[in-house]
Image (cartoon, rainbow, N blue to C red; front, side, top):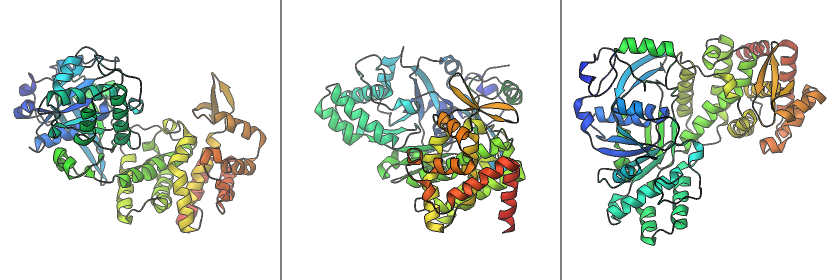
Length: 506
């Protein structure tokens, strides 16, 4: 079977896949991207490719591989081409699309090709820097930008900007729009602060530091798209048979996407790929998108994960295929969580976002495991659900019943029965499951000493966990304790079914 590359494009059939036009392979290199991961290929690079097909952005991406792990031989063999297989549910309809992306022009190794990276920095075509170096990538470390290459991502980026400043004599119109996509709040603001600190520590010229601040723009951004990457071997083989070629970079992605970028009109004029897809938003304030994702998507996941797992469902999709669990998840999101979003948001906007999330949960191509979502359960619950809970009670003057049920399931999930290799385990139907939470030992101790009511009150009062005394919320502790006791007496799934029946009948 022939391998995907620019040399084989002309011999491939477009019946099963959308192929790039020859003109797209000759576009100038406008973007420098730090990171080769699947999220970048499935979201920013996909959007740039989509804009190029529409004749809007007309630019390609030079990718910098910053880490020592893995290699870039597949990118080299395939001339940066890769297949993106998009699968999902939109408006209740199944989506299937295959396309060959030509957004990436080449991939450079920071370790062995740093001089070439700096040459890209000096190109008059360059306009944008994109990054996804994981959450730990945006950190201040002692770094010398004159190394080849510097150690950290901010150090590498500062070296790129310094080389550009030198090449163009500090011209104010040669600054770059920098869009980090690392999943941390205020990622652009934090990156800019680190760049400025590193510039001072490296003793760089005052004129450069002024240019760094005034000619360049670091944008906060939020990305949201599930990109599992390479499929299982059997699916890979089936797809390659359908497509008629082999592709070591073949990437799976869900249909939904969001890239919210904080920027003004000047930024929008550079990021013209915004025009190619409604999922890209450039505006001065992106907090609305952050709140919707945190409260409705992440909050629903966190308040449902223990309940669904203890009810016998391994994946989100399996739970959504069950009438009872799907009903609970829908009511939790659309009734309890939407009503408690601690941010001004139009009802229709939150309802539509919630509908999209439910479509994503039903995606038959994404295997999102509930047990994985329970990782750092306590911290996620505090960050994603507590503010929503407090706001709901204040506004509605009642207990959010679905949220209380989810909280009770959290308490039950955290019932550790034994410890092995520093990890606590709970038991479900005679089988052990790991409790990957730093508070696991605390809960194991409580379960040995307290009954359901005492345990519930003790945990809710723990301000070190929640930054609030949740036992002070009228009726909340009593309802959580009642749900927990029913789970112990009747089983988790039966409790959910009874809850849903009572809700529908009311």
